[in-house]
Image (cartoon, rainbow, N blue to C red; front, top):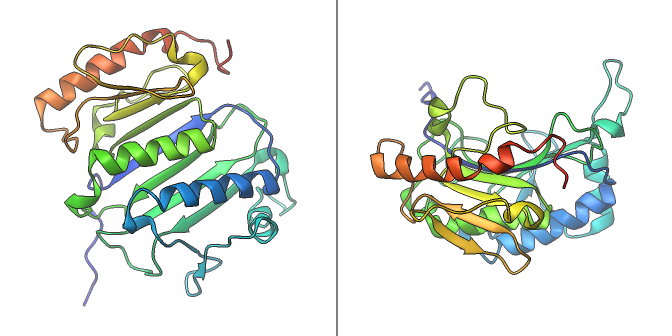
Length: 252
């Protein structure tokens, strides 16, 4: 039987970003260990994580910094001739299960980080399986708020967002995070930029202990077909105009 084809736009994602910041595999490994420990407190769905050296042999996530750093170092960017290019950063990913097939309870975390170059942006993301509708108990505000904060605060990101994948249909064709505040379900702004933003009255607002700012269009699961959700997200996007006006790379 032919497996069902993925349908674009059904999945949900979180991505957090920051400009150039050089980090070693050891430094990134320590962030990863803190991240996984924090994820495990969010929900049982995040209890176990696996690394995939190849498609057939998933391994339990390493809890030793040195061992994990070796695996991250092995994923260094390379030149066209295969030469390691640490200046271009490291790619690394992990999944919450050992299944090789897509499913409604699968999550993946993937990272591109460690580069001092300001383009492309350093980032780390969490997403449900591409093209598969996730189970509704997993796309809750509780889970996505907590996961966004875990990613953003552990990796000291500048900006972050959570949304259904089909929200990109509502983005401008030339949308670029370096020049435009995100239109999303939940948005995070780092402490040093939070004072620029005056949250709209319609937003769910959370001021973090370190000064970071989280804003959400709704505490319901975001639906791009819901006019109230979209309108509240647009108001948050508009409130981010002072951030959009900042020169890139972001500094102040």
